[in-house]
Every structure is written in C-alpha cells, then in structure tokens.
Amino acid sequence: MNLITREALLSFRRTRTLSALSVTTIAFALFVTGLFGLVALNLRGALRQVAERVQVIAFIKRETPSQQITAAMSDIAVFPEVLSVQYVSETQALERAQRELTEFQDVYKDLEVNPLPPSIELSLKPEFRDARHAAAVADRLHGFEFVDEVKFGQDWVQRLDSLRDIAGLVGLAIGLAFALVSIVIIGVTIRITVLQREREIHIMRLVGATDWFVRGPFLVEGAIKGFLGGTVALLLCASVFAAFRAQRIGLGVGLRFFSPGEAFLLLLFGVLLGFGGSLVSVSRHLRHV
Picture 1 (tube, rainbow, N blue to C red):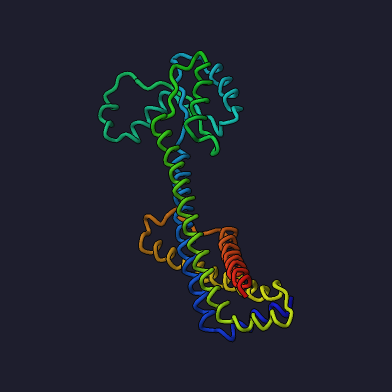
Picture 2 (picture 1 turned 45 degrees about the horizontal axis):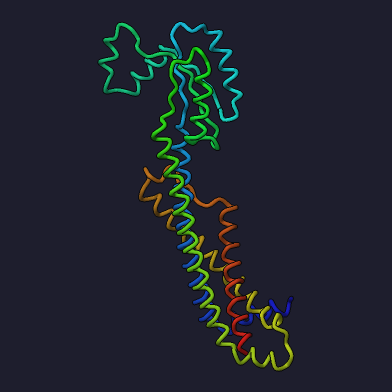
C-alpha cells in the first residue's frame, strides 16, 4: 500500500502540469455541482419556511361553553399530525384583523358587533404539512359538534405540494445530469494520464505485474485528485456564496451554506468520482494492452 501511494505521489511530481489540469477540471465540474446543490438546498429551505404557515383553523359556534372547548383542545392536541393547538377568542381575532389588515382598519373601527367568531388554530408537524394530511385533520375536526367550519387554505396548500414535487423532480434530474457530466470530464482527464504512461504500464505488464498492481497508483491518484478538486470546489462555492450575500443583504437573510456533513459529502463525492473515473479509464486501457 505504501508503494502504491508513493507511486501515485510520484506521478503528481512527474506530470505536474497534467495533474494541475486534472485537479482544475475536477474542481470546476464539482463547483457547478456544488452551486446547484446550494440552490437546491436553499430552495428546499424556502419551501419549508412557506410550509410552516400551513394551519388548520376550526371556527367555533358562538356561546360554546369554555369547558367543552378546553376538553376538545386536549383531544385535538394528541392527534399525530398536530404540533400545537391555540385558542383564539373573538376579541383576539378582531385585534389581529385590525393589526394585519390595515386597509380595513376604518371598517373595523365602526363595527358595533364583532363579526369574527372564535377559533382553534392547529399547527401541523413538518412531515404532515401537505394537503392530504391537512384535509384528514379537517375531517376529524368536523366531528366536534361545536365546530361550525374548518379551513386550511386547500388551494394554496395543493399548489405548495405541486411546487415541492416539481422542485424535487427537477432537482433530481439536473443533479444527475451534472453528476454524469462530472464523471465524463474526470474520466477523460484520467484517460489522458493513463495514455501518457502507456509505455510504463506495458513494461509493468511484461515483468508480471497484476492488473490490480497496475491500477493501484492510478486509483489512489484519482482519489487524491478528486479530494483536491472537491476542496477547491468548496472554496469557490464559499466565495460565490459570500459575494452573493454581501450584494444581496436583504435576500441573503435566511440563506445558508453547506453544513459540515454536507461539505464532507461533496468531498466524498469528489473522491468517489476520481476513484471511479480512474478505475474505468485504467480498466478499459488494460483490456487493450
């Protein structure tokens, strides 16, 4: 293993220009993949923030005894989909409307009777913030005799579900496309290295070297190039992310960079691409030697 690693490092020294070109090529291939990953990551975060607004609201009949409402809220709180339950009185509903619907403030000031009913507002757990689960919760709420009407913004929740599905499919398709392009680019750069050392490989085969002994230095070299390329790609992504946040301060709030675990996955992806590209290129060459 030490011999294979030493040979891989010597190959870097013997072919400095080609090695630098390979690392640069891998870095830019992973840089594009990393940028797309950042966009997908923050888009998913934005959709998650929008989904936090998904609520199921049960409007209560007036004159319903408070004891009955309290008992019902205890039952509703144990629904598997429910994160929290909040009671909103008529007065609180009117104050909220006056505060949030500023265009109707004059109308609310002249009211002699509060037209807004009390309600129970349910926040759902993250995994249940979709139209299907919200509708299921709404159906159960209809079972309480004091509930007059239940709303959860069905139309916009369904649109949110569609947007999440589309974003997921598009993200998967583009991500796979970038990954395939990266594999092809890395394979070509490693292939150039293999062809440059064709005579050396031929001599090794003549003296009895096994295929895996021949492959070893190239595989280690490919993994090292993938790691270096991934490191450069991460630095480039960090620079672009920082520049974007600096120029888009308002939009930059809430954006996030890769977590340590996600950054490690990008580096691991680079190592695997370098290793896999080397394996394919060397194996193909050995079949014709």
